[in-house]
Image (cartoon, rainbow, N blue to C red):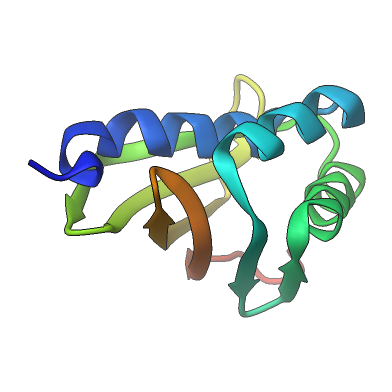
Length: 125
């Protein structure tokens, strides 16, 4: 049985934890544990390659949206070494403003690449 199918929810939860981590040192540890060294992240607004750039991108999101939190939306699923999951982003304790869906490719259980799609973005976000 493949690892992705068994661990889709765990992989997605760890990914969301990276995006919610405001402490740069702790975020770096989470990225190192869950992403390959040459990992790539891309979405319609940004691209990052490697641990340092991915961490810096997450930090920039925290600066732009202080106090916002990511949450999983629905049930993550997997096929082979690919995982798909949706998420929401909004102020802690308030209605989510942004929604997206990410597709991840794994390498030995770690994220090798993530392609993000923005499903709902309010004007000016």
